[in-house]
Length: 142
Image (cartoon, rainbow, N blue to C red; front, top):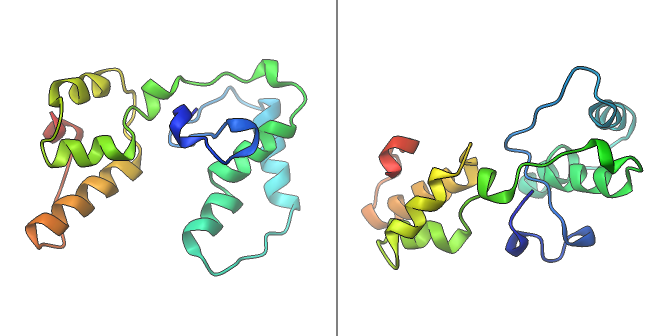
């Protein structure tokens, strides 16, 4: 799941983070997702980012989950494990603002760092350094 701060404005105040998903073979909810994606046409709007979120990303997964009757068979990783930082945390880390140790502690609990964090960090660094490319790994974040 996403942190509460990311869920504002979404159905039932929840929002899937699909950066890390796993299931046993033939899990009913995964089968439900696959069936939906195979049988439901999607009308593209031309907004690539929103189209991805709405067709195969967090928005469609959140919507399918909210309508799924057997929620008891679905487990989520807590937000601190898959979305440890808020967007402002990325900015604080890049610009060395606030409590850096606290931000690094948040990463210690993470099992994965979603691409959005890496993208935001690269964007901030690129803007700051006037360069278009840099390489960031989880190790370099420490």
